[in-house]
Image (cartoon, rainbow, N blue to C red; front, side, top):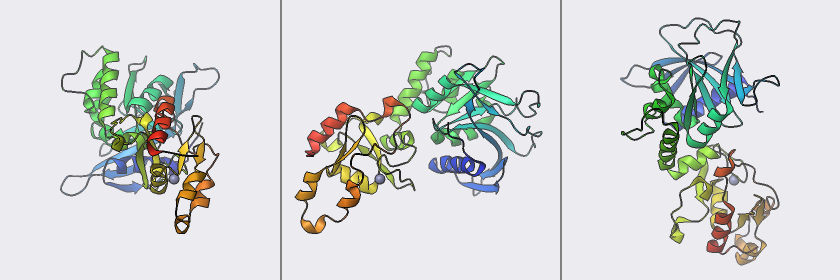
Length: 320
Ligand SMILES: [Zn+2]
């Protein structure tokens, strides 16, 4: 279970907000982080962020039970700031958010906040989810892409039932199903997540890193496995790979492919097809041959579909 340090946690928050186009100014680099959101004529909202790594509750706990350790205890909230109480699971790449109004003066006697694994996995899959704890607390889990929306609707977010969280995040249609139909709600979120553009969904699933080399730097692109130009329009994440620009171009040129076990195969035939003057860089590319993909979605259902991979090879006329 990966644990990030304070600077890395701040970086995750900043990247998440950047991705949704939110302008952020950092007022305090140390926890609790103080950020000013927004710009121009609109008064910037100042938010105070407490964030910890989400870890398993320990051997004596339910295997589904995850939590953050609230240390040191949070001081009383300052009225001019909106407080946010977050957890971050680096393995699943999701935030969890607890009701800041309920937990503003959490006593030292109960220093941890809980969330179930199911809730986090659901958010990793569909974008956002929530659960009601036995205490009545509503815990929200969300992908980085949705952090800005969460912060904007902070005041109401934790007073909502799980199904209403969906509409508050503007994820559902206007005719939301009855609020107790959780399955229907989940389908609605899925539908909405799928309607987010292909690039956003693929980049999110790969945590913005190239599947082959891991490069981030906002230099990655979502590549279709079965290409759109072939006449097939499959925008599911499993028909995609997030690739840096070089590897995207190399993949589309059938210079390499990915095996059913996600091993990289660099074509030696493709080298010979290139004019001799244009082979520079082949050695570097072939150094990936036989290696597993560097970066894959956490959820298996989002990883490249092997049938689509083979279909993509046929269409690009990949030759080993
Ligand atoms: Zn790459």
